[in-house]
Image 1 (cartoon, rainbow, N blue to C red):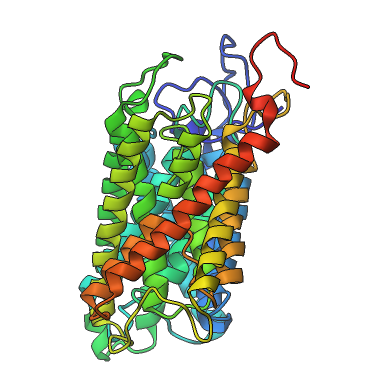
Image 2: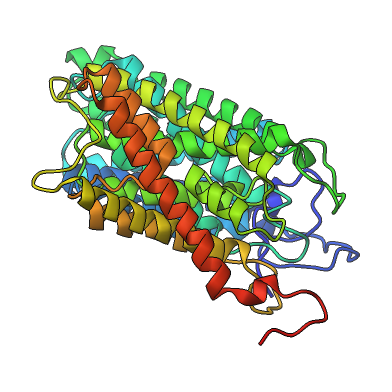
Length: 503
């Protein structure tokens, strides 16, 4: 039977022993000592392997592929240990689960002790193997406060995604838990790794912060670094991110916060708007920070951010996270999203994009490329017609995929879970971003366009900056409108009235 994920995190478990699904009316069998100890051993072993992988990548890996390698390891470990212990592997995640009421505090404390111990051991082992000190610290020319903000935001994102995909009732209905949880959690590191590695080192885990910092000071106790408690400081701000994640989770998901099991429960419009704001902000900030650092993996990182947030929020607001997508869903009809709700989503999405642009501008002002403007305009030899064609085509593809995999009726299945929708939508951003990046930048989202317009305006963009921003937004809106029109033609069965046949 399908393994039940994160049963150790439920205040009133409706399943019993880890690694198995048992009927709700079945009395759980008595556990042996070995079975009771297994979750704690799993957290120690999993955290050790994760931190050792981070250390190895930092010392011998490729700067281009390190975030992807670490994300892959986290994804694998979560799938391995999720049915056993919940697969936290991170004190910040455990604390967030405690704040959200998903894990008892005594268990949180035990997990944190074991995770930090495993991180310290992994740090010592990596030093003995590689004979090279590591450590965590802000990446020059960025300051600690720049690094702290990145660590707070992406640790918060990681914890929020874990809570949303692994513990939320909407994502895990009784006896039908999802199987995308590990993918969503791992790909947070793809998003935050490329967005933050050039600012803070992209740690996002107190166990890794302590373990790597111990290694960094081991060989040079008399150096200046020995007097700088970066590991402790990083852990502190990561725990702040965990606390924020727990609070945001309870705000977005009142059914989980109030332990409501009513199947007719519907999120409020405020929860839906907060959902759209959070997802769009994370996406736009990820794009902005990648551009600030001149990352070659912007499309890969942005696609990962979108995928993780869609898996996290789809059952709250639909997780459009894009005004063009919302327009397509509204115009596709079928009662999927009313015009009034769509308008509220547009407000939340555009506000999130604007805020993300201003935050990105602050990092740009402190960064190594602060003398270079980040502008929305045709790239190199291309003209505005090429920009129109690229942005409309790939925004059409994005919106059309959302309509097809996230709003259309799916084939009959024993499970109500849809595994592929988030991966398909995120992959569209990756494909479109790489395909059109050299033409238009591969923005594909009016909220992200507004974000980059704000970034360009703050960093001294040309006098046509906002006009160019508006042009990008209109091109993308045209793609959303076209997607709705084509969907009406290609998915006629979606509009079939009950009891009638279509020719």
